[in-house]
Length: 584
Image (cartoon, rainbow, N blue to C red):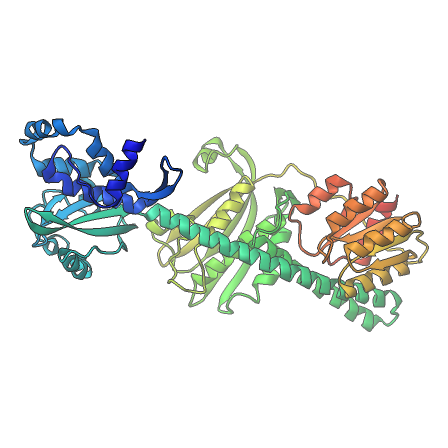
């Protein structure tokens, strides 16, 4: 190791020379290695004394290559290989590298070029050799000429990104990174060029950025949903309390309308959470006609008045097994996309019907199992799409809209595709330029049954028995919940966070029949508070409330022993039945 250490110290001081097989191509090989070194950087090396220092890949490879050939043999090796064509060997080396390479002489003529770079340029190797770069690449040369001239003066060029037609995929662009190095060719200055395809790296980087954006939207949506649902809980609760005592028919009508509007408003946070992917998807038996009708009410005021919205519902439609929030998002994305394709107005049609797909049709539609399906069609009379656009519409981040446009980011249709696949369906697209587009989606007939929870008429005589501990940090929600429980006949304790709730439960647990816990609270959340209550009383009965949507933690708490989940905002009737189930 001491001998190697001395050699390395000598190399690091700059007193090294590479004595390879061919001195005439050593500069080219050094430049190639330097290009690799530029990509890989440096790494630490430990010497006998225990000290560390950084060593560049360039120095490592060139130094080791030099040491691999004993000095006494180098002259013989050089004589044996003198007859090898220098440039031919250089080209062979370049063709073996995982990126494109070329060598230009002092007049910027191609001396050598790898097959990879020739293909990137869209020409053969022969079409480059001996020709001025401007004659071969007239469009690119003006952009790179200032940099090439500096390199001829001995100044390396910084890595630069550029876009060019993809040599493998016609009609598409790829992103490349080039790097220009100064070299010497027979005493004259020259340029060594490396070009690397970084399209996949750029795509991954864009995907990461978009995923971070989606995560940010999700967290923002979660915060909005939490606050919004807490406020709606107050509106729901106090309106129902007023409704119970009201005798005037006109006032009853107004109060019921307030509740109906609040129920519609409660759907908005759920859609926000679904868009931000902060809500877990749960497949249930759903009636597609009802989902479409609900979305119609939301779409009608959203899309431009110049667009006529038509609904055509199939009779006796099969139930489908799907997440209703996801189907909402699917319909919304497709309809907004269709509306944007009709800037001068037109007709947007939504149709549902039952269909039976044969073996042949199922094979054509992605190997589905033949049988009963529910078909959802969304058709517009807009600008349509070319065949090339149709082939790419489900690619993440692909968009035909202008960069920076507020209309889209290339995520709407990929989300549609994901939702369809998650729900075991298939999506088919038919489009013609200037005639419009039709998206046809097939969902398998569902196997699940509709929830058969029968809500009995609300009994508000106030004869319910028991004491309930409320652990809720929002004062408005806590106050209206206490008022509703007291109206139902329950006694209540109220605390504002998990810490206070655990302390009170520790003192009064023998008197408390059930606990209503909010999951998100300061100081101590619902999950931790429930665990501590279980330590006090292993048979504690708790009901979880959340305004954030189901994001996974609720399911974990159900497995821990929480008796049920009550989504905010909830009605007094839903609260009463949940408590009956909790205490029974």
